[in-house]
Length: 133
Image (tube, rainbow, N blue to C red):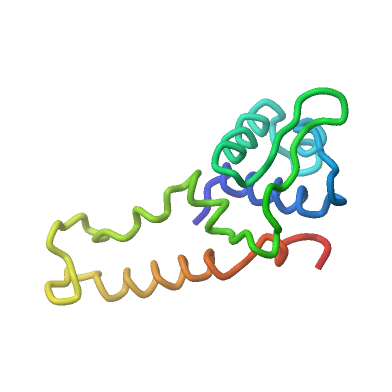
C-alpha cells in the first residue's frame, strides 16, 4: 500500500533516527545503505526537509539529520507529503454523495479498511521501525 518512494522515505528516516545527536549523514551513504538511487534519494530528502521532517546542511560534515524526535514522528508524518493518503477520505467509487447516511456499495468496507490503515500510520512511529529496537 506504500509506493517505492514512500518505502525509501521510511527507510531513510529510520536510518537517520539512529544517528547520534548532532550528526549528519550524506545522501550517498543513506542511498547505499537502503538500496536507493543517490540522486533520487537526495531529492526525496530535500522534499522531506521542506516539510520539516529532516534538516539539511551543506559542506564538509553536512548531509541530513532528523528535525524531530523519531518517537514523535509517525509513519503518517513521513508518508503524507509523498502519498497524500489524507485524500483517501472520499468515496472509493468516486461518488460525490457517499456518506454514512447515503452509502455506496463499498462504503462500510472501505471506511473500515481506510480508517484502520490510517490509524496504523498515525500511531506507529519511526522509532518503532528503527533497527535500534
